[in-house]
Image (cartoon, rainbow, N blue to C red; front, side, top):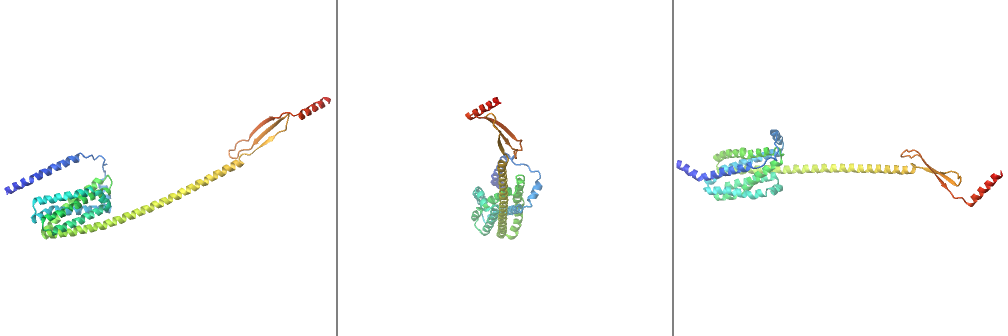
Length: 345
C-alpha cells in the first residue's frame, strides 16, 4: 500500500507543484491590478435586493447555477467514465487541453458573437452544446472519440461563462457590479458545481454512466429551450420598449414644433404691432408749421412751431429765423417819396 502511495506521489507531485506555482503567480498579478476606479458600495445588501426584482437577474442566477451543475458533473465523472472505457492518463489530460484550446477563438470573438446573438442567446447555445456533449458521451465506446465532444467546451465554459459575467455587468451599476459578478461566480463554482457533483454522483451510482448522461442530455436540452423562450420574450419586450420610446420622442418633437411655431407666430405678431405703431407715430406723432411774419425793413421773420410728440411726450419746439432781402429800385423810390411827404408835412 505504501509502495502504491509513493508511486502515486511521484507521478502526480510535479502537477501539484506546477498548480501551486501558477496559483501564486496569479495572486501576484491580481495584487498589482489597480482597482481605485471602482467606487465603494455602501449598501450592498440593499442594492442586490433591488436587483433581485429584475427577472433578467433571476434568470441569470438560474443559468449560472445550472451551467455550474453540468460543469461539476463532467469534471467529477467524465474521467471516471473514460477510465472505465480504458483511456490512459495522457488521454485524459489531452481532453482538458482540447477544451482549453477550443475556448481561445470563442473568447477572442466573444464581443461580435454576443452582439449578434445576445447574452441570453449565447447562454441558450451553451446549454444546447451541453446537450450535444452529454449525448455524445452516452453513445461513445472509444475514449478517443471524447476529444471531439471536448472541443465543444469552448462554448459551454469559455463563451457561456464569459457571456454570463458580461451580462451581469450590463444589468447593474458600477457600485454593485462586483457583488453581482461574485454571486454569479458563487452560483457557478460553488452551489452549481457542488449540486452537480452530488446529484450526478447519486444518479451515476443508481442509474449507471450512460443513463446518467442521457438524463443530463434531457436536462440541458430543457434548459436550452427555456432560455430560448426567455430570449424571445426579452427581445419582444425590448422592441416594445423601443417602439414606445420612439413614439414618446415623436410626440415630444411634435409638441416642441407646435411650441416653436406658436412662439414664431407670436413674435411675428408682436413685430407687426411694433412696426404699425412706429408708422403711426411717424405719421401722427410729429406735426409742425412754418409761420411768416410781416416784412419789416426788408427782413422776413420765419417761425416754426412743432407740436407735442405723441410718442415721446416732449415739450413743443420753437425756433425763429430772420432773413434779409436786398432792396430794389422801386423800394428806394418809395422810401424817398415817403421821406419827402414827411418833410412837407
